[in-house]
Structures are given as structure tokens and as C-alpha cells.
Image 1 (cartoon, rainbow, N blue to C red):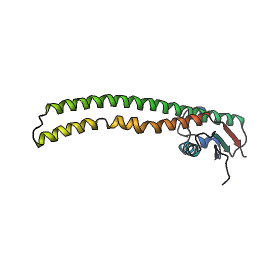
Image 2: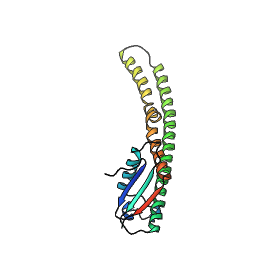
Image 3: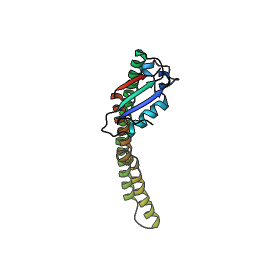
Length: 176
């Protein structure tokens, strides 16, 4: 396997059509990348150091055609810009969901604390009920805690990677 400089992602294809999802009816410059091609590019980009400058080199085994080269370059930039924008939207929605869940969870916890204070502290069953109300209240905070501690950073990391891929130079080489 040939040694590649840091940040270089090289993809070799028989022709430009292999790069795109054949089921997508959009014009080429707006088409989705083929799932395998996207997975290859993203997985190689993830392996690069975060500070390295990414470069994408597409080698097509077809006759040189400047219009194909431009179309491939525009399509890749458009695709990863689109995906980064979707990730931004997903990130905002996730944080909105986290805030809403937090508000609902805190209100529910408050209701459970109020209900607990109304249960007389006498006997085994009332102790179980009082403890069950407290546990239920804290369990209601599980989702907002999960969102605010764990679920946001993978979405943000993916968006940053997609931004890097959208901004990276795309070189198209032909091997006839």
C-alpha cells in the first residue's frame, strides 16, 4: 500500500458516476454521495489528526474531462456543506430537546417532592411510596442529564469533521 502524506484521502474509482448515489434523481452537483464512498471518506478523515489539513484526491480511471473534475469538486463540497448544516440543525434540536426535557424533569421532580410530603411517614408501605416518589422524580431527569453530559459531543464532533471535509481542497486526477 502506498504511503500517503498526512491529511490526504485518496479515492480511486472507475468513473465519476461511482461517487454518487444512483437512486438520487437530483442533478449531479446536488446528488448524495454513494454511501460507501461517503463512509470511506469520513472514516479516513476521522483517522487524521484534528489539526492536520485535509485534502481529498479522487482518481478516476477515465479520460480527462475538466467539466467532470469541476462537477466532482463542487458536488463533494456541496454534499459535505449540506451534511454539516444538517448536523448543526441536529445539534440545535438536541440542545432544545435537552432544555425542554430538563424543564419537564424538574417540574416532575418538584411534583414528586410535593406528593412525597403529603404521604404520612408511618409504616413500611408509606416509606416505600415516599422513596418511590423520590426515585421517580430523579429518574425523570435521566434524559436531560444524558443529553447535556453525553449525547451532544458526538454530534458536534461529526459536524466539525463535515465542516473540515466541506472546506478541504478536492483534487481530481484522471488515469485513462
